[in-house]
Image (cartoon, rainbow, N blue to C red; front, side, top):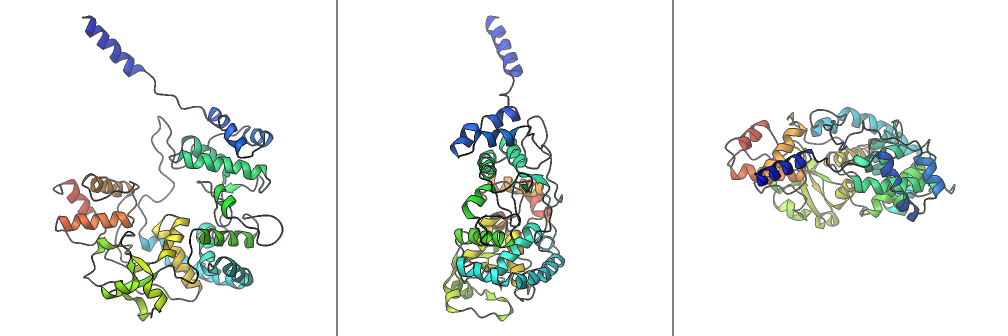
Length: 406
């Protein structure tokens, strides 16, 4: 009986024991003082800027105990490449981009001369990030970064960004009023996090300030320097649109499979629109990108593709920026049109990733996005089960995984 009583008491204590309490927002912020001090932030700035600071729990990507995750304010369905690389938006930005290319011609030439990054690529980033500065950033950056550091999914990253934001204010680089950001704390015309500012921001207009908020030359040059620091290859392209023969295995379209462009040509891959490649381009290593699996356009992606991707880790982002940069320079649209393929919901793609992981096909993060590694893993699954090989997530393939696809 004593054993039973002890077991019952232990069970009650286990069930009723509270989880480790998350520190209050204010407690968390105050706990960061010593780290801020080590970074050079004054006590006065710390107290002034954190006094009355409250969390913004409406932000996406938060982990709030006791509350179901609120989905981001984005489309319920993952956008297809055709939807994201919208021709209507590309066409509008092309017109604006050419106007800005003329207006800032000398500045862009000087940026390319200094950093090696083409003006049209920088203009395309500016367009994608803030609509050439026309998008109004709605959030208080310090509040966003503090909230994400306290209860976001990437706490360690945002903890550092919050501390650097305090350092920016302490050193007078920006006023709190001008410190507006996206929901993830990115600021200025070309969307820099605070750590990006300290690593890459430059004074390009010669006024003694690194002003990515109000100086167009500073903002564009800072983006150019960031691309250069990430490894931009001077004179190289971001990608080549290509025609892919049916003999190419779409599961090979992933960044880990890189061979010289000349080798891809031996496999039957040919540049779109009859483009002729020079000797330097032929020896450059590239991977194959098939954004819609076997459907839609395909691309060979050299190092510069991944430099842009390091600016924003999204293949669709790189496609948008790269294609827009070409269009600003006078190039036509893609030779191969996007298909009318449908996309699964984010939750369904994540379920597919989970199944592919459990069966040894996939080893990357579960994010609900049908990126290169997900499509490649899906292709391997299709081959193993003698399904149509197209490397594209469909309801039919997901149903197969749920059922007999063991």
